[in-house]
Amino acid sequence: DTGVSQDPRHKITKRGQNVTFRCDPISEHNRLYWYRQTLGQGPEFLTYFQNEAQLEKSRLLSDRFSAERPKGSFSTLEIQRTEQGDSAMYLCASSFSRGSTGELFFGEGSRLTVL
Amino acid sequence: AQKVTQAQTEISVVEKEDVTLDCVYETRDTTYYLFWYKQPPSGELVFLIRRNSFDEQNEISGRYSWNFQKSTSSFNFTITASQVVDSAVYFCALSEARGDTGRRALTFGSGTRLQVQP
Image (cartoon, rainbow over all chains, first blue to last red; front, top):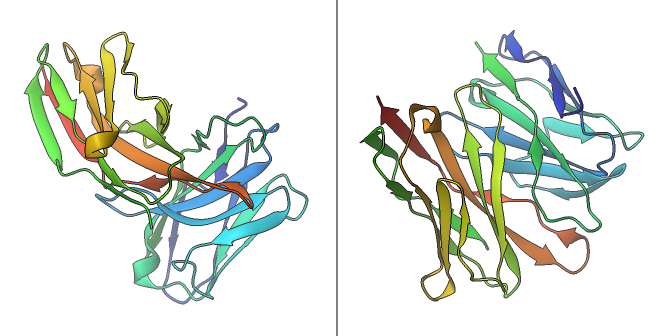
């Protein structure tokens, strides 16, 4: 399978715990995006990387959230001191930057439930 | 700031009916891209189409067609002869071009849930 993969697919945690999600993009893609999707809503942009550089962060990304892409390949999204409002589907997507037609290729998401 | 509005929250049709999903967008840029994505019950967003702001030609792909009208800032999506497998949530999205770091991330609408009854 050469698509975007995310791990874990589901995570249930207690309020106050830290969680980390991993995303492996399509190997040729140099851009990687994180989105959050809550029930009945469209995906909301959180942050994106071009290679290892984090180029943009949304105001939605509070200081409890941190994303990394240390070698320009896979990325991790960590949420510290989780709150019930963090419960959502966290989506990862990847794309090319040069010659890109702009579409993002999405993974199946990591669903977070905070009790 | 860019914004995408999908006023139809949910649409239910009977198989073989035609259905149109509406999308209205707001942007200050003259160069931008519009997209439609499908999210089936499995959850993975699937790319359907991309249009750039300079190409208002309508497009048809099988049972799918798209009507882009800059004058009304709309990019509507029509499914002809709908099928049960078309049941999904459909998202319209907008991406503005940025000169410094290239294209911005996509801004999505809230989606339209389409239910096609047999």
